[in-house]
Image (cartoon, rainbow, N blue to C red; front, side, top):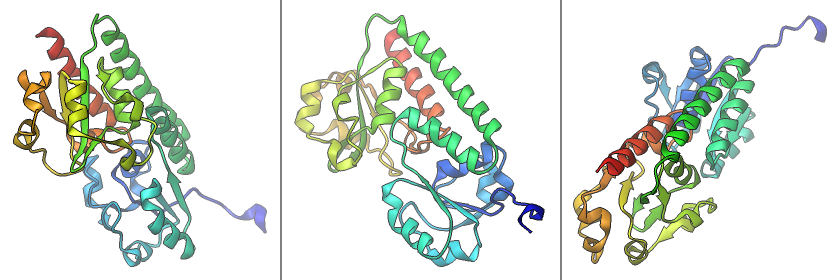
Length: 266
């Protein structure tokens, strides 16, 4: 009889991105996570979980062997593995956050799906409170430095929406803010000449898991004229702090705020 059946929230969860794994752990469902991508590093306990592949290079057989009753995915970039999992009869929850508010909503959605809504709301409240504090702190600065964020180097790709928003929260001005609404990276390609023209006072870079080559950046033709290059204001931000749209964005926000704060002091 239906009335006598005890229905539970998902007990075996596979996460296909670092941030979905981090969210699951931070809302108290880490013990139910059975598989994670190779990029998952936070929290420490996530490293003990089975690895199921990379951001877009998953082994369907490895995922299915873990017998998940829910798979957590992110974005249209994972649509192929999501399609295959759904075809294999697996339940998939795929969020597609691009803005910082989207990130907070994704935490609530994932927390709700795992039966951890109260913890998810608490996490979102903590993040929102810190954002408000940093925004208030930086609001008193009379000038906001021009900031260029480089997500990739060949071609040059400016920051995705949530990065652009974090720069503003931290007290800077994204020199390519008009591109923040472009969902695909291809829509945020900029020319080296355009960066020179916008003359950022601070350059932040995070090359999608690849170490940033400072020499390559400062050696670009004409870039010696950029204020940030002349002042040595080139800073690498760890990808896991700025390119994974989850709770770790707070570490990226703090880092950017520190950079801008030091710039203001100088």
